[in-house]
Image (tube, rainbow, N blue to C red):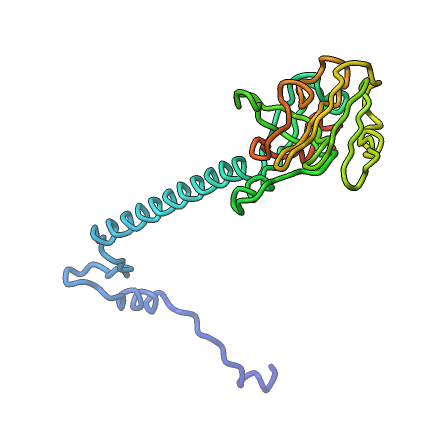
Length: 247
C-alpha cells in the first residue's frame, strides 16, 4: 500500500439506514404529507386585460384614421396634379399624322397655363410646339395641333406652303422648313389657301396632316386660338411605349 494513501479522502457509502433517515427529513405538512414546492403567479386581473384590449382598439382606430388621411391626401394630390399640372390625353383622328395616330397617349403639360392664370398673364407657347386647345365654338371638344404663328405674325398658306412674316422675318420664313418636325410631314397638296394676322393673345395652329380636309385648324372653323383656350402643351408621347418621345 502507498504510504500516502492515508491522505486521500474517500466518501463513505451511505447505508440504507442513512438514506431512510434523509427521506424522513423532507419537510411535511401538518397532516404528515410531504410539502411540494410551488411557483406563484399573478392573479388574473380583468381590469388589466380590458385596458390592454382598449389600448389595442385605440391603436387600430388611429392606424385606420392615418390610412384614411393618407389615402385622401393622395387622392386630392392626384386630382390637383391632373387638373393644374399634367394629365394624360388620348389622341383620336388623323389631323396630326404622321406625328400622332388614333390610340396614342400623350401627357398634356398644364402648368404654364395654370401659372398664367395665377399671375394674370397670357400663356403663348413657342412656334413648333404641339398644344391641346379647346374648341373655340363650343368648348365641348379638345384638339391637338401644332403652333405655326404667334402674336405679331402674318400667316400665309399657298398651295400647302406656309410663309410667316414678322419683324424678325420681314420677307417671311417657313416654320415647316425651319423646325425639325417638318422633316416628317406628309407631302404637300394644293388646297385651303389662307392669309391672316395673329393678334395679341392669340396663336395660329395647324395639323401636321396637310392633306386638304384632313385637319380642322386655324385655317378653317377654329380660327386663331385665344390664349385662354389653350389647355396645355404636349410634353411627351407615352404610348405606344416603343414610340416614347419628348416634345
